Image (cartoon, rainbow, N blue to C red):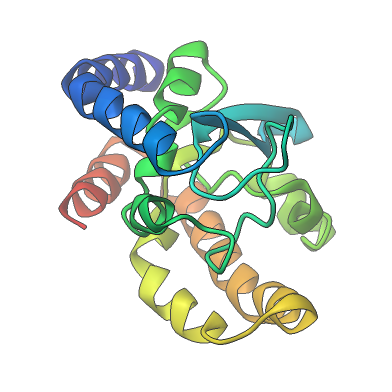
Length: 194
């Protein structure tokens, strides 16, 4: 039932968002040189590496499909900062929901370098389910931004691993323990409202 619901929601959203996605793609091309899409590598169910496409929100190295950085900061374009703020750069992830790599709701799909920081038992638990486009930690974005505000380089990495990642993992564990149709609906409605 969850897979059927994921496909129905993803298809509906893709159709609704297509005109806006075309406008965003055009604006990205007009704002700065580089591709419209970049690769986003995340860890999926059972530790499988996923290569997801998203709208380019940052400056890229010539000839590369990878972003320089990937955090909000000086490398983000003006449009890119807006896309990141509202999660719009991840709209193309809906295609990965159709493919079956992601669910609409599930634990956050994390970068490989941070999954390596998960405690062993938590890693097993979190990676036992399909990651989601949205999760319970989506509502903590202001708290996370406040914890990371003004930090750069190693200090930013340390703050993320020591303060933000434990919050996200707590949400992921809570989701896994209480997941169900009702929980998914609640998270989805809150996410759309935000």
